Amino acid sequence: MPANPHYGVQKAFIVLACALVGACSSTGTSAVNPVNWITPYKVDVIQGNFVSKEQIELLQPGMTRDQVKAVLGTPLMASLFHADRWDYVFTLKRQGVESQSFKYTVFFKNDLLERFAGDAMPSESEFISTLSKKRQPGAVPPLEATEVQLKAADKPSAASAPDAMPEPASAPVDVPAKIYPPLESQKP
Image (cartoon, rainbow, N blue to C red; front, side):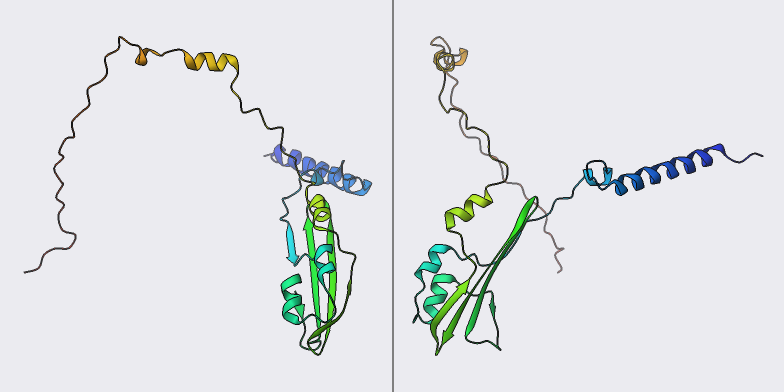
């Protein structure tokens, strides 16, 4: 008996598909490679405390640890080896947008704020404007009725016609309560 001819066609198709995918990946362009056409959903990763420019402006040397914590929040990193140093680190990773990372450090001496330094922090409005790069909602439709809609609402319906008889109010009907058997058998 001759070999099944479908196996030869399947092998040829697999070799052709592998060659095609290999050729696409060797060109270096992601638009040609069909593997790159489908991208999985990636969750936004937000870590740490965002410290704004307005919060930094409230810091003053000589503040206590509790006062600094009230202004900046709880630090992300407080090391046992560096008890007089708090690090505020904030990272934001979103799909399709370059990841953002900010670091700010405050230094204490005798439990009072001595100095503070770090990245140039954006203001709250600047930071929020960078977040709005996602899909913008469409225009909100007007919430007013048109003249045609108002006229249609004013027309009396057949149920509200003056010659229609109102339905008599029905009297409440006493429904006997159902009696169910006990869940457990009664033992004498």
